[in-house]
Image 1 (cartoon, rainbow, N blue to C red):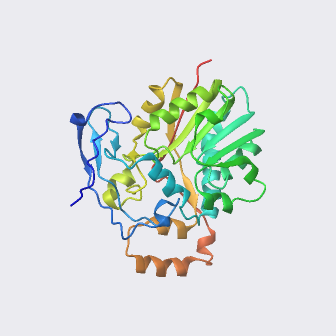
Image 2: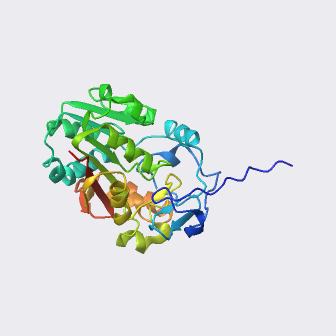
Length: 306
């Protein structure tokens, strides 16, 4: 009888502490019968499935200590469904407001790269802010297909590879709701540092697992997700940039603004009740009024030294 190979536990992807510094954080609740193309889609209905996670006692990062192979993750995102184009526009509007004070500190607004660009909605906001060279990397072919035709020339399908971009050629690199999904977030921000011009800025958005709402919901929080290889706090999100050579590192939580029917999608309640309420909401006057809520999303940034 064949047994699955035992995968050695990895070190903390933030501080490098060994498995002896790890303590249990989340149990493995994956159910292969429920995993589908929508499991790796953005802004999906929460499934509350997760890999086993540990918490690093040295730096407080929660992470999957035995993650899937990089190739497995890439294939899952390539085949993922996509049905959240409207919410992508709403998210881009929220990001544009939150990032405005950071962009005001840039000396140059020419070239920008977004890792995990989806339909390119935020790239369009960057164009409105004065950037003239727009590049997006997106692994999901369905997301790219959902992009308006005028954005598609900006978007390249695949995973981020720093060899595809000239060193010190970018003023801005954005990575929104993606750092939790990659196996080595340190390698990503280090590669971004090499691609930035001196004085350029990296901006990331992550879930803050220590935000009050996530702590209140516990395992019923939408951040408990099979896609997430690690979960940051505000402190660990800033530390990720500090230890990879960024200066003037900062961060702030911000509000997202969506229709009530989308907020309802994220709430922990029986699916049948959620579906009935969603049908009643959609098309109503109430659903046309977007609600602005701080749900614990955190924007962090750091500049490449001059």
